[in-house]
Amino acid sequence: MAAKQAETTQRNEDRIAASFAALEARIAAADAEYTGVLADKRADFDAAVAAQNAAWAANVAARTAAVNGAIAQAEADIAAAEEAKRASWDHDEKEIRWAITSIYNYDTQAALNVALTAARAVKDAQCDERLAALAVTIQECRDAWAATVVAETNSLNANTAAADAACTAASNDQWDQLNAYFAESRAQFAAWAAAERAALAAFIADCQAAWEYIQASYCLDHGKESIPNAGFGCNWS
Image (cartoon, rainbow, N blue to C red; front, side, top):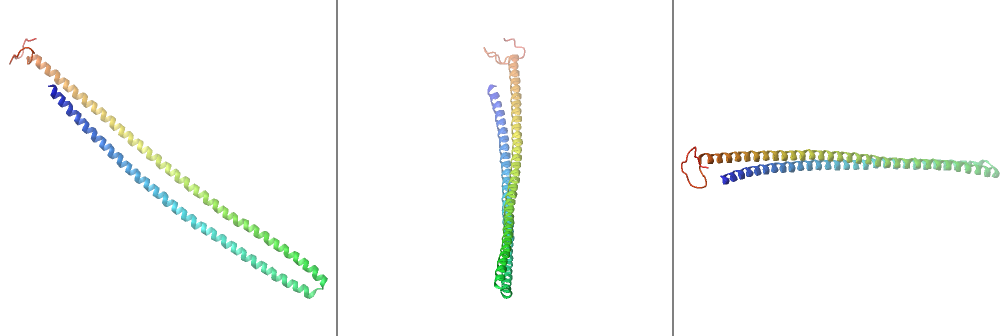
């Protein structure tokens, strides 16, 4: 009887162990599957970020080239305008000096030439001042564009970091939920296994009690001598 009880108990333990192994295998498979899904999502996210950054770098390069080209053209136009203006002044000054020499006497020529030289100096100073102001404006354009690139790049990086953080937070939350489900599954299994063991133990105890009752009732084994077919009501004690 004891051997059969031990055998039955072991079969029950083997059944519980096999069920637990199956549960752990399913949990491991789910864990691996979700790990793979997260890895794919991370790869997709990183690829999207890389593509975004590459597109942004190309956009910045193209727009920077356009800005620099416009500035270079503006500088060339300013230089050409300055050259033409100064050439015009040189021509006018030459004609005026020729006229002074042709019309006025020496004393008057000297005074007029001095006045003309002073007037030309004023024009040159005004031109130089204008060129300096335009140079400042052009440099401000360069600086403004550089600042815009920095600000927009920082904004892009901040948005990317925020998206990355949100993705990581969502991933962690999903992991927490999945691990909670695994823990609950193990807890439910432990409760089920305990109930199965308790039920079997109760069954074995009932069987043992019944067997002992049968032995006492029918005098199957009194421990002193064999009484075959003693039958119900044996008064052995």
